[in-house]
Length: 228
Image (cartoon, rainbow, N blue to C red; front, side):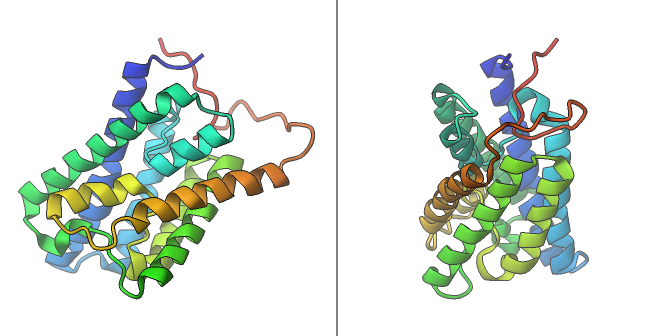
C-alpha cells in the first residue's frame, strides 16, 4: 500500500530540504571557511542522499528529485496522479532550504547555485549523462549507499563544470534565493531527458522474468510500505 499522500509529501519536502541545506550548504560553508574542499562538498552531497533514502524511502520513496519522480512514472512504478504534488513538495523543500542558507550566510558561494563553467552545450551533455547514470543505478538498485555513492562520484567529477545537479529541484531552490538564473533551463531539460533515457535502458537491461527482491534491502524505488 502507498503511504497517505500528505505524509509522503511531507517526507519529500523534508528530504529535499535536507539535500539542499547540506549539499549546497557545504559549498557555502567551504566558500566561507575553505575547510571542506571540493571532495568534502561532493562527499556531503552523497552522504545526505544516502541518509535521506535510508530514513524516508519507506514513506515516500525518497525521490527528492523531479527527474526521479518522472523516471519512476515512465517506468510504471509511480502513479501519474502523484507526480505534480511530489514535484511541488520537492521545489518547496529546496526553496525553503535555500532561503535558510541565505539568512544564515548571505550570498556566500552564491548559495551553491548551479551555472555552467564552460559552454552550455558541454554542461547539457554532462548533466544528461550524469542524470542517466544516477537514475539507472537508482532504478536497478535504489540502495542508499549505491545511490549516495553515485551522487558523490558525479559531484566529484562534474561539480566544477556544471555544479553536478542531476536534479531540477536542487538547481531551482538556490537559483530562486540567489536570483541567478544563468542557463537554468538546462538543469531541467537535461535531467528530464536523462531520466527518460535511464528508463529505456533499464527496460532493455531488465530480465524477462522478474528477479525476486531481498525483503531486507531498503530500496529507494521499492513499493511504499503502509505506515502505522
